[in-house]
Image (cartoon, rainbow, N blue to C red; front, top):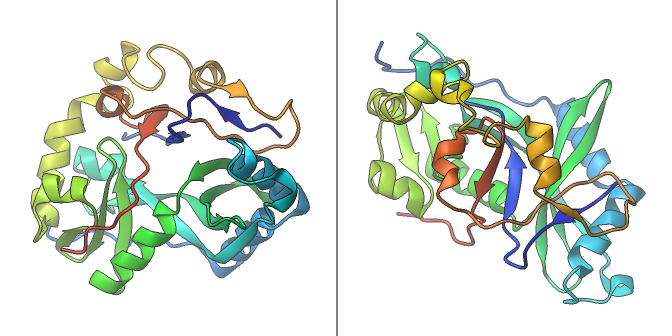
Length: 268
């Protein structure tokens, strides 16, 4: 298991799979089962994961390795990202798809991190550590603002929303910039993302040109070359620290996408 990181800015590059007629409503977004959440929690609380978390929290000398005492706070939450079928305008496609389950880890000095877990074979495994607790915070904010809705991210601009029926409401400042403080309709949101990303879906000339997701590299090559080992090769969790830049829009989730880690939730 290795933690991979580059810079002290502690933003995280994550592998998010890509964005592959008008909408008044969309199909219900598949939800994570109770068994899946329990399995993700078990993976997050395993001794190996907690050991890796200790090194992650102590990496910049903010707290002594022996004093980190990491713990998992709350339940794993499902994390959804913009669906390629929705972007393409497929009738009845849900606005978002389930990407991974996230568990919030807390260190003794108050640092927080998000553990991303995915199914691998018959088990669930932690595949990334990201600084902050965006996933759980936005899940809670979305449940408060639009109970029963689906909280999802538009990773190209790091915007978080909650959707229910024909309503799409913003949860952070990037989403407010995109759809306004009062939100928008699902139909209007679909038109916006189709205009922004419709010509950059998987299989498009844009994607085939190598401009997306690693700029011509395979996703694994992009991830491997983007990071340096910080743990001497011990453990199985990877985390990459990068700055968010102009490539976030171009990457379109087709490979490693630079994500800014927000600290606040816009409650407008």
